[in-house]
Amino acid sequence: MPRRHSRESDTLIVQRSVSIISVFSCALALLVISGSAHAHPHVFVDAKVEFLFDGTGLAGLREEWVFDGMTSEWMKADYDADKDGAFKAAELKKIESEMFDSLKAERYFHRVVVDGRECPVTGASGFSAAVVKGRVAFRFFVPVRVSGSAKKRSVKLRLEDPSIYTDFVFSKDTPSLAGERQRFSTEFKRSGGAQPDGRYIPETIELRFRKRP
Amino acid sequence: MISSSRSQIRRLFAGAMIVVVAALLCAASFKAFAQDAPHPFSRGGEQGVSKGEPAAGSVTGEASFLARIYRFSTAFQKEIRERMTEFAREMKNEPFGRSCALFLFFAFLYGVVHAIGPGHGKSVVASYFFCRPGGLSHALLMANMVTFIHVLSGALVVAVLAIIFPAVRQTQFDMVVPPIARISYSLMIAVGAYLLVISLRTVRRKEPEEEGIPPGRGSLSHLFATAIVAGLIPCPGAALILMFSMLLGILPQGILAMLFIALGMGVTTSAVAVASILFKGFALSLARGSSNSFTFVYAGFELLGALMIMAFGSLMLIGSF
Image 1 (cartoon, each protein chain N blue to C red):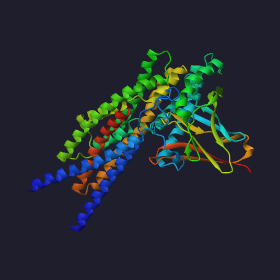
Image 2 (image 1 turned 30 degrees about the horizontal axis):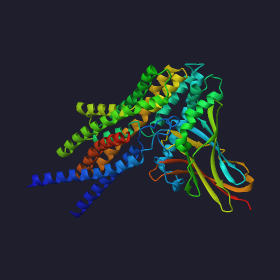
Image 3 (image 1 turned 60 degrees about the vertical axis):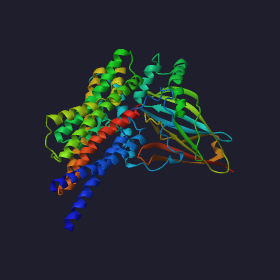
Image 4 (image 1 turned 90 degrees about the vertical axis):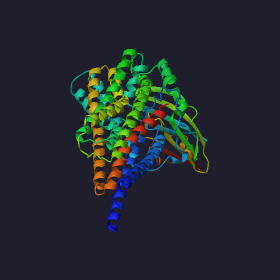
């Protein structure tokens, strides 16, 4: 009888362990699936963003993306064909078609939320590229039309590569204002963030503005 | 009698809690372990922003502890890479001088910090020592084996690409990695399943092996097999440095840098391996007073470690398609 009891006890222990571990494994599976966007960044970008105003309100974002030294060396090797340290018209066209246009499907990594509603970026214009102190910089304009009114409007911007391949950091002088900004009263807020699963979210800039009376 | 029973319950509860915490710690590192994405500047919209996109309302908030570590690791890697780029440029004029020494030193630092991020076999190493016995020397051996194979695999892929293509680029590397990663994940499932069978036999026999006892030849072969399988995935970070060295015409220094990156990554992975062994030892020592709770905690670790390796391999394999 004691022998039988011992076997039953052993079986019970194994059953308990297996059931607890099964629960752990399910939790683990959920966590792995939910955190599948995690990876290493291999491209680092310092982004400078200027909020451009016209007579009616916000017209869009004037941006400069400065790439890290290593990525810049690759870009120069691939696109600066004559190795003169600058991109000529033909070289610029090649960069735009091969490196910049492919970002359209990614909405140029922009997350724009206007008054709490997602506002997908559908295009960018005025692309140019230059070498500044050995680093390659992309310059372009992203139209984000938000008309000004007496009521305060909110525009949140985040630059985020969902695959984490590219790491975006806003430059110290971001955000700045340009154009007919005097017509509007403005305020900014910069904040970092994290999802409930602990995943890091790049910094968000919020612009609040209203038409001056 | 009542006091003894309460004490047993308390020990059992403490043991169960430790296993839960261990599982959560491993899960937290597991979830961050994913395949590297293809280069976004050339993938032509293969992966839209809608994938994994958070809700519009969740754009702000305080960064969690894990998020802060991730941020620190990313910012530090960026800084190290900038320094390495500067020294690499200087090496064009002075190939083996001060710049070379600093390039290699920063390669070592890059390895240490790069391994803090997701991937690089840390979770597999931690899980392995949950289910298999081992001491400090085994932790160091396995951790460094994983990272050296991981870096070597990345360097070999670059070498093969350099034979095929006139100029090696990240996009070509990104195309080669997924099939190799799938082989690694499949083998990981097999190794995890094998370890699970061994763990189940050990648990059923109720013969807990004491911690710190050197594993026999059979166990060492398990350690080698797990290390090879976990390290098989080519390290994209090391490959990037090697490709960069080739681009700037400093290949010998680039190859040396691979050694230093592997050593650096070995430091981080060794720390995880040692922590795993110490943690398991601590949990078992707490439960040692009661035969039931000791067996329960021991069985938990045995099965959890093997299951984690299996689960990780399975989920990553599914996720890679």
